Length: 231
Image (tube, rainbow, N blue to C red):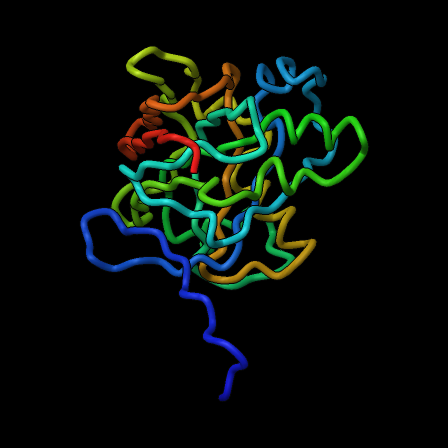
């Protein structure tokens, strides 16, 4: 095949304990999936149908990376999240079959230009510029299901320069991993390499140049991100 210009490199995330990497197809994110976080964002937690947004695949960043403070924001936030990687294609997946489609789990950080996101929300516009900017999806190496099972409880914590900012339990998710996968699969076919970021607990807040942010999930290890100066 002759391309007009060279295709972009495949975006990938690491596999824990291996030199293999997972090609990333899409990154789905769910909004306000912990009750306390919904409240701090000025919304009532409820069981209305969940909503999702996407980040581009090339927003992924490895553990330990230094990320420049992004442009066009004065309110750059962290969001600790459990990450799910789909390893088997499927559509209209029944909830009791969804976990058969999961390849593994990891630790993520849904970095957010909060001022741009809130402005877009107030204007009834999409969140893309607030959520889907360059290097906005740090993800630690993924643990295969064969090694860690399907975590549905366990501590999730985020620190900035050693100070705890977020702390909760995976059991506090409003919409469980099986529910999220089933709902998404009824909207579009999920395919191997799709990634789901499952929502953040309360306590989101700003990062500044020089900060070190660490997300930890029980049984899945840590994700460390350093914030560098603006480019």
